Length: 335
Image (cartoon, rainbow, N blue to C red; front, side):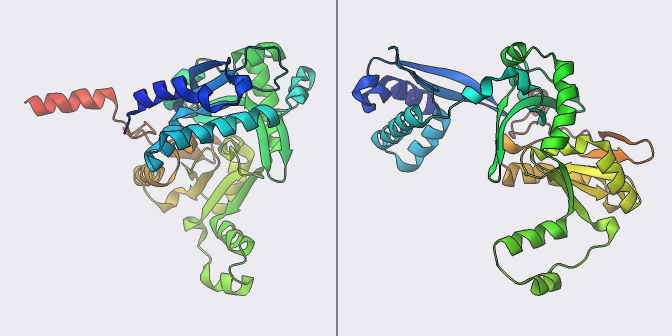
Protein backbone atom coordinates (compact mmCIF):
# COMPACT_ATOMS: atom_id res chain seq x y z
CA UNK A 1 0.00 0.00 0.00
CA UNK A 2 1.28 3.48 -0.93
CA UNK A 3 2.12 6.03 1.74
CA UNK A 4 0.29 9.35 1.65
CA UNK A 5 2.91 11.38 -0.22
CA UNK A 6 3.17 8.79 -3.01
CA UNK A 7 -0.62 8.51 -3.13
CA UNK A 8 -0.92 12.28 -3.51
CA UNK A 9 1.54 12.31 -6.43
CA UNK A 10 -0.14 9.38 -8.18
CA UNK A 11 -3.63 10.88 -7.86
CA UNK A 12 -2.42 14.21 -9.24
CA UNK A 13 -0.89 12.40 -12.21
CA UNK A 14 -3.77 10.03 -13.00
CA UNK A 15 -7.01 11.81 -12.04
CA UNK A 16 -7.62 13.37 -15.48
CA UNK A 17 -7.53 9.91 -17.05
CA UNK A 18 -10.74 9.12 -15.17
CA UNK A 19 -12.51 12.35 -16.18
CA UNK A 20 -14.61 12.77 -19.37
CA UNK A 21 -12.80 13.70 -22.57
CA UNK A 22 -13.64 17.41 -22.33
CA UNK A 23 -11.48 17.69 -19.20
CA UNK A 24 -8.36 16.01 -20.56
CA UNK A 25 -6.58 19.34 -21.21
CA UNK A 26 -7.47 20.73 -17.80
CA UNK A 27 -4.95 21.81 -15.18
CA UNK A 28 -4.62 19.84 -11.95
CA UNK A 29 -3.74 21.88 -8.88
CA UNK A 30 -2.97 20.54 -5.40
CA UNK A 31 -2.78 23.17 -2.70
CA UNK A 32 -2.81 23.30 1.08
CA UNK A 33 -6.21 24.44 2.35
CA UNK A 34 -6.49 25.81 5.88
CA UNK A 35 -9.55 24.45 7.64
CA UNK A 36 -10.55 24.78 11.27
CA UNK A 37 -7.95 22.92 13.40
CA UNK A 38 -6.23 21.33 10.41
CA UNK A 39 -4.59 21.85 7.03
CA UNK A 40 -5.77 19.63 4.18
CA UNK A 41 -4.56 19.01 0.64
CA UNK A 42 -7.19 20.17 -1.83
CA UNK A 43 -7.21 18.96 -5.44
CA UNK A 44 -8.75 21.21 -8.10
CA UNK A 45 -9.35 20.47 -11.76
CA UNK A 46 -9.32 23.74 -13.69
CA UNK A 47 -10.58 23.68 -17.33
CA UNK A 48 -8.36 25.72 -19.65
CA UNK A 49 -11.05 26.50 -22.24
CA UNK A 50 -13.67 29.27 -22.17
CA UNK A 51 -16.59 27.28 -20.78
CA UNK A 52 -18.80 28.97 -18.19
CA UNK A 53 -17.96 27.35 -14.86
CA UNK A 54 -20.03 28.35 -11.82
CA UNK A 55 -17.56 26.89 -9.36
CA UNK A 56 -14.23 25.08 -9.41
CA UNK A 57 -14.82 22.05 -7.20
CA UNK A 58 -12.28 20.88 -4.63
CA UNK A 59 -11.79 17.35 -3.33
CA UNK A 60 -9.61 16.62 -0.32
CA UNK A 61 -6.82 14.13 -0.87
CA UNK A 62 -6.75 13.36 2.85
CA UNK A 63 -10.27 11.93 2.64
CA UNK A 64 -9.42 10.07 -0.56
CA UNK A 65 -6.44 8.47 1.15
CA UNK A 66 -8.62 7.28 4.04
CA UNK A 67 -10.91 5.64 1.47
CA UNK A 68 -7.88 4.11 -0.22
CA UNK A 69 -6.65 2.63 3.07
CA UNK A 70 -10.06 1.09 3.66
CA UNK A 71 -10.54 -0.50 0.23
CA UNK A 72 -6.90 -0.80 -0.98
CA UNK A 73 -8.18 -0.19 -4.53
CA UNK A 74 -6.66 2.90 -6.18
CA UNK A 75 -8.81 2.60 -9.31
CA UNK A 76 -12.01 2.57 -7.28
CA UNK A 77 -10.91 5.66 -5.36
CA UNK A 78 -10.00 7.53 -8.57
CA UNK A 79 -13.29 6.61 -10.26
CA UNK A 80 -15.27 7.80 -7.25
CA UNK A 81 -13.34 11.07 -7.07
CA UNK A 82 -13.73 11.74 -10.81
CA UNK A 83 -17.48 11.10 -10.61
CA UNK A 84 -17.79 13.54 -7.71
CA UNK A 85 -15.78 16.15 -9.58
CA UNK A 86 -17.84 15.85 -12.75
CA UNK A 87 -21.10 16.11 -10.82
CA UNK A 88 -19.82 19.19 -8.97
CA UNK A 89 -18.95 20.92 -12.25
CA UNK A 90 -22.49 20.51 -13.55
CA UNK A 91 -24.41 20.87 -10.32
CA UNK A 92 -22.21 23.27 -8.38
CA UNK A 93 -24.03 25.89 -6.32
CA UNK A 94 -25.01 29.11 -8.05
CA UNK A 95 -23.05 31.68 -6.05
CA UNK A 96 -24.27 34.72 -7.95
CA UNK A 97 -26.53 35.69 -5.03
CA UNK A 98 -23.44 35.83 -2.81
CA UNK A 99 -21.99 38.76 -4.70
CA UNK A 100 -24.25 41.43 -3.22
CA UNK A 101 -21.55 43.01 -1.09
CA UNK A 102 -23.83 45.87 -0.04
CA UNK A 103 -26.11 43.43 1.79
CA UNK A 104 -23.29 41.36 3.26
CA UNK A 105 -22.95 43.49 6.38
CA UNK A 106 -26.41 42.30 7.43
CA UNK A 107 -25.30 38.67 7.21
CA UNK A 108 -21.86 38.65 8.85
CA UNK A 109 -21.82 36.24 11.79
CA UNK A 110 -19.08 35.05 14.15
CA UNK A 111 -17.54 31.72 15.02
CA UNK A 112 -15.12 30.70 17.77
CA UNK A 113 -12.00 28.67 16.94
CA UNK A 114 -8.91 27.69 18.91
CA UNK A 115 -6.11 30.24 18.40
CA UNK A 116 -3.09 27.99 18.90
CA UNK A 117 -4.41 25.23 16.67
CA UNK A 118 -5.25 27.62 13.81
CA UNK A 119 -2.26 29.99 13.61
CA UNK A 120 -1.73 29.45 9.89
CA UNK A 121 -5.40 29.88 9.01
CA UNK A 122 -5.73 33.00 11.15
CA UNK A 123 -2.91 34.72 9.27
CA UNK A 124 -5.32 35.16 6.37
CA UNK A 125 -8.45 35.97 8.38
CA UNK A 126 -9.59 39.15 10.10
CA UNK A 127 -10.06 38.02 13.71
CA UNK A 128 -9.77 39.01 17.34
CA UNK A 129 -8.48 36.91 20.21
CA UNK A 130 -10.50 36.00 23.28
CA UNK A 131 -8.65 34.02 25.97
CA UNK A 132 -7.21 30.97 24.12
CA UNK A 133 -9.79 31.36 21.33
CA UNK A 134 -10.27 33.63 18.33
CA UNK A 135 -13.41 35.15 16.88
CA UNK A 136 -13.54 34.71 13.11
CA UNK A 137 -16.26 35.89 10.73
CA UNK A 138 -18.48 34.10 8.28
CA UNK A 139 -20.84 35.34 5.58
CA UNK A 140 -24.20 33.64 6.17
CA UNK A 141 -25.40 32.87 2.65
CA UNK A 142 -28.46 30.78 3.39
CA UNK A 143 -30.45 29.48 6.34
CA UNK A 144 -33.26 26.95 6.22
CA UNK A 145 -34.75 24.12 8.26
CA UNK A 146 -31.87 21.82 7.32
CA UNK A 147 -29.06 24.13 8.46
CA UNK A 148 -26.97 27.01 7.19
CA UNK A 149 -24.59 27.76 4.33
CA UNK A 150 -21.79 30.21 5.04
CA UNK A 151 -18.42 31.34 3.69
CA UNK A 152 -15.41 32.18 5.84
CA UNK A 153 -14.43 35.86 5.56
CA UNK A 154 -10.75 36.03 4.66
CA UNK A 155 -8.64 39.13 4.07
CA UNK A 156 -9.51 39.31 0.37
CA UNK A 157 -13.25 38.99 0.97
CA UNK A 158 -13.15 41.58 3.75
CA UNK A 159 -11.45 43.94 1.30
CA UNK A 160 -14.20 43.40 -1.28
CA UNK A 161 -16.81 43.99 1.41
CA UNK A 162 -15.05 47.21 2.40
CA UNK A 163 -15.07 46.17 6.05
CA UNK A 164 -12.21 46.19 8.52
CA UNK A 165 -12.04 43.85 11.52
CA UNK A 166 -13.79 46.28 13.87
CA UNK A 167 -16.66 46.72 11.42
CA UNK A 168 -16.92 42.95 10.95
CA UNK A 169 -17.00 42.47 14.72
CA UNK A 170 -19.68 45.11 15.32
CA UNK A 171 -21.85 43.66 12.55
CA UNK A 172 -21.33 40.07 13.72
CA UNK A 173 -22.27 40.80 17.34
CA UNK A 174 -25.68 42.08 16.23
CA UNK A 175 -26.26 39.66 13.34
CA UNK A 176 -25.28 36.45 15.13
CA UNK A 177 -27.73 37.06 17.95
CA UNK A 178 -30.48 37.93 15.49
CA UNK A 179 -29.88 35.31 12.78
CA UNK A 180 -28.74 32.47 15.07
CA UNK A 181 -30.39 33.20 18.45
CA UNK A 182 -28.54 31.75 21.47
CA UNK A 183 -30.19 28.85 23.29
CA UNK A 184 -29.72 27.73 26.91
CA UNK A 185 -31.21 24.31 27.64
CA UNK A 186 -30.81 21.84 30.46
CA UNK A 187 -29.14 18.57 29.54
CA UNK A 188 -32.28 16.73 30.65
CA UNK A 189 -34.35 18.69 28.15
CA UNK A 190 -31.83 17.97 25.40
CA UNK A 191 -31.94 14.23 26.18
CA UNK A 192 -35.74 14.26 26.24
CA UNK A 193 -35.83 16.00 22.87
CA UNK A 194 -33.43 13.49 21.33
CA UNK A 195 -35.48 10.52 22.47
CA UNK A 196 -38.79 12.10 21.51
CA UNK A 197 -37.49 13.08 18.08
CA UNK A 198 -36.45 9.51 17.36
CA UNK A 199 -39.78 8.23 18.67
CA UNK A 200 -38.03 5.83 21.01
CA UNK A 201 -40.47 6.14 23.91
CA UNK A 202 -43.47 8.15 25.16
CA UNK A 203 -42.91 11.24 27.29
CA UNK A 204 -44.28 9.63 30.48
CA UNK A 205 -41.66 6.86 30.31
CA UNK A 206 -38.97 9.41 29.50
CA UNK A 207 -39.76 11.37 32.67
CA UNK A 208 -39.36 8.19 34.70
CA UNK A 209 -35.89 7.58 33.25
CA UNK A 210 -34.52 11.13 33.20
CA UNK A 211 -34.34 12.23 36.80
CA UNK A 212 -34.44 15.89 37.74
CA UNK A 213 -30.98 16.99 38.83
CA UNK A 214 -30.43 19.60 41.58
CA UNK A 215 -29.36 22.98 40.20
CA UNK A 216 -25.88 22.75 41.70
CA UNK A 217 -25.27 19.58 39.64
CA UNK A 218 -27.31 20.44 36.54
CA UNK A 219 -25.65 20.82 33.14
CA UNK A 220 -26.82 23.37 30.59
CA UNK A 221 -26.13 23.25 26.85
CA UNK A 222 -25.35 26.65 25.33
CA UNK A 223 -25.61 26.84 21.54
CA UNK A 224 -27.86 28.50 18.94
CA UNK A 225 -31.16 27.58 17.35
CA UNK A 226 -29.40 25.65 14.56
CA UNK A 227 -26.81 23.92 16.73
CA UNK A 228 -24.11 25.00 14.25
CA UNK A 229 -21.04 26.97 15.40
CA UNK A 230 -23.08 27.72 18.52
CA UNK A 231 -20.14 27.95 20.94
CA UNK A 232 -20.01 31.66 20.06
CA UNK A 233 -23.24 32.05 22.07
CA UNK A 234 -21.15 32.01 25.27
CA UNK A 235 -19.87 35.46 24.28
CA UNK A 236 -23.28 36.96 25.05
CA UNK A 237 -22.92 37.88 28.70
CA UNK A 238 -26.60 38.51 29.37
CA UNK A 239 -27.46 34.86 28.80
CA UNK A 240 -24.64 33.66 31.04
CA UNK A 241 -25.70 36.08 33.78
CA UNK A 242 -29.31 34.92 33.68
CA UNK A 243 -28.19 31.29 33.96
CA UNK A 244 -25.76 32.09 36.79
CA UNK A 245 -28.50 33.89 38.68
CA UNK A 246 -30.78 30.89 38.22
CA UNK A 247 -28.13 28.55 39.64
CA UNK A 248 -27.13 31.04 42.34
CA UNK A 249 -23.42 30.71 41.63
CA UNK A 250 -20.62 31.42 39.20
CA UNK A 251 -20.33 29.12 36.21
CA UNK A 252 -17.72 26.83 34.72
CA UNK A 253 -17.98 26.64 30.93
CA UNK A 254 -16.76 23.42 29.30
CA UNK A 255 -16.21 23.54 25.52
CA UNK A 256 -18.04 20.55 24.07
CA UNK A 257 -17.24 21.54 20.45
CA UNK A 258 -17.33 24.54 18.12
CA UNK A 259 -21.09 23.94 18.06
CA UNK A 260 -21.88 24.08 21.77
CA UNK A 261 -20.51 24.50 25.29
CA UNK A 262 -21.68 23.08 28.61
CA UNK A 263 -22.30 25.34 31.62
CA UNK A 264 -22.33 24.07 35.21
CA UNK A 265 -22.28 25.60 38.67
CA UNK A 266 -18.79 26.10 40.12
CA UNK A 267 -20.02 23.99 43.03
CA UNK A 268 -19.83 20.91 40.86
CA UNK A 269 -16.08 20.36 41.31
CA UNK A 270 -12.49 21.28 40.51
CA UNK A 271 -11.97 23.03 37.13
CA UNK A 272 -8.75 21.11 36.41
CA UNK A 273 -10.61 17.82 36.76
CA UNK A 274 -13.28 19.15 34.42
CA UNK A 275 -10.58 20.20 31.93
CA UNK A 276 -9.11 16.70 32.01
CA UNK A 277 -12.54 15.31 31.21
CA UNK A 278 -12.95 17.80 28.35
CA UNK A 279 -9.56 16.82 26.88
CA UNK A 280 -10.38 13.12 27.06
CA UNK A 281 -13.75 13.59 25.38
CA UNK A 282 -12.13 15.74 22.68
CA UNK A 283 -9.58 13.05 21.86
CA UNK A 284 -12.04 10.15 21.94
CA UNK A 285 -15.40 11.45 20.74
CA UNK A 286 -15.12 14.81 18.96
CA UNK A 287 -13.88 15.06 15.34
CA UNK A 288 -10.72 17.15 15.07
CA UNK A 289 -12.40 19.83 12.95
CA UNK A 290 -15.05 20.37 15.65
CA UNK A 291 -12.79 20.62 18.74
CA UNK A 292 -12.71 24.02 20.42
CA UNK A 293 -10.44 23.88 23.46
CA UNK A 294 -9.11 21.62 26.22
CA UNK A 295 -9.51 24.40 28.79
CA UNK A 296 -12.39 25.35 31.09
CA UNK A 297 -13.72 28.91 31.49
CA UNK A 298 -15.06 30.73 34.54
CA UNK A 299 -17.97 33.17 34.49
CA UNK A 300 -18.02 35.50 37.49
CA UNK A 301 -21.63 36.56 37.97
CA UNK A 302 -20.72 39.51 40.20
CA UNK A 303 -18.01 40.91 37.92
CA UNK A 304 -20.03 39.71 34.90
CA UNK A 305 -16.78 38.54 33.30
CA UNK A 306 -15.74 35.39 31.42
CA UNK A 307 -12.11 34.24 31.76
CA UNK A 308 -9.98 31.11 31.71
CA UNK A 309 -10.34 28.90 34.78
CA UNK A 310 -7.52 26.53 33.78
CA UNK A 311 -4.18 26.56 32.03
CA UNK A 312 -3.52 22.87 31.50
CA UNK A 313 -0.49 21.90 29.39
CA UNK A 314 -2.39 19.80 26.84
CA UNK A 315 -3.37 22.77 24.70
CA UNK A 316 -3.10 21.15 21.26
CA UNK A 317 -6.32 19.69 19.93
CA UNK A 318 -4.76 17.05 17.70
CA UNK A 319 -3.07 15.14 20.50
CA UNK A 320 0.43 16.06 19.30
CA UNK A 321 2.82 16.84 22.16
CA UNK A 322 4.29 20.33 22.16
CA UNK A 323 7.92 20.88 21.18
CA UNK A 324 8.72 22.10 24.69
CA UNK A 325 7.45 18.88 26.23
CA UNK A 326 9.45 16.79 23.77
CA UNK A 327 12.65 18.68 24.58
CA UNK A 328 11.96 18.38 28.30
CA UNK A 329 11.36 14.63 27.98
CA UNK A 330 14.52 14.08 25.97
CA UNK A 331 16.58 15.93 28.60
CA UNK A 332 15.07 13.84 31.36
CA UNK A 333 15.79 10.63 29.47
CA UNK A 334 19.41 11.64 28.89
CA UNK A 335 20.08 11.99 32.59
